[in-house]
Length: 121
Image 1 (cartoon, rainbow, N blue to C red):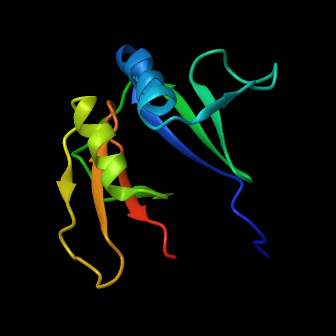
Image 2 (image 1 turned 90 degrees about the horizontal axis):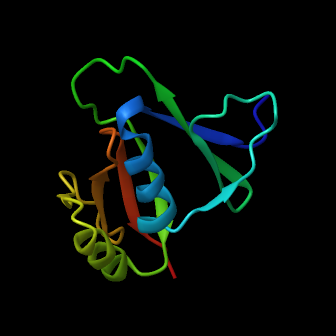
């Protein structure tokens, strides 16, 4: 039986590894944590509270962009949007707004979709 979410893994092509690390580390402000010695030396792991985001590198990433996504809760949605825009990241408006739950979407350099949602008071 599932008791918790440990991590989410996103993938990017080899040539976008540096851009993805900049995106997750600088734009999103995630804290990079050391990977175990047995893990491949490429990619990165980031700690988010009790969970992790694993960035993996794949030589071949095929397929059209998808609506599959990871969702991040932020304390200041407007501030997050400004930060993404300042970094040149396209804001994708919410195609199915939920009353009382403001949000938008972005894509990382590898095309992985991220949902950015305002924390509820």
